[in-house]
Image (tube, rainbow, N blue to C red; front, side):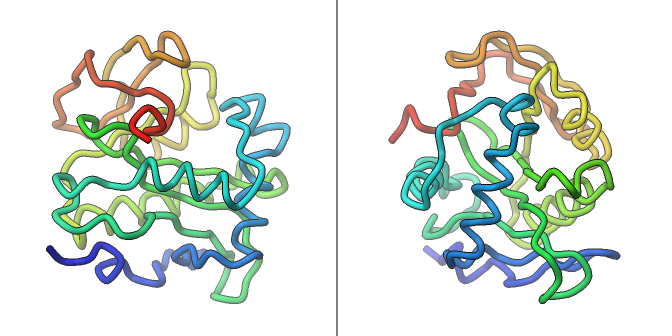
Length: 200
């Protein structure tokens, strides 16, 4: 089976951004951990206790795309850092495609450093990552799980092209609204336990 890592482009480009494949360097970890652990992130999406590169790697290892979804050996994470302007511009956050459980479609996520929130960067990068995943990797179904009370992330999901699919009961977050792509069938029984960690 072909390698997922070999299929992922190193860079994605949008009008204002260069979206760079995560490279496991200290600078990339620092940006991601800062975005995940900002006061705004904790208030809106919760504190998942991810503070170190090792914890971040464990989360990703438990949430890689399955071969059934991507048609390839899941030998890497689909995580991209967002830079403004060009490949040397400031890193402002990240977008990702992760699969929380083997029977659940992968979900598109994003986290942005606080000074850069509210400027459309998450939607711009997320839309390009979704395009790449569907056109270049062949991922058919993608969901988003912004949280029922996270109005900013709900707006991002809608700008990317997601629409409200319905509500499900999750093991770790109670009642939650799932956003799906147009034409997808909503499954109220999908398992959205925390980021695939129940399969670790």
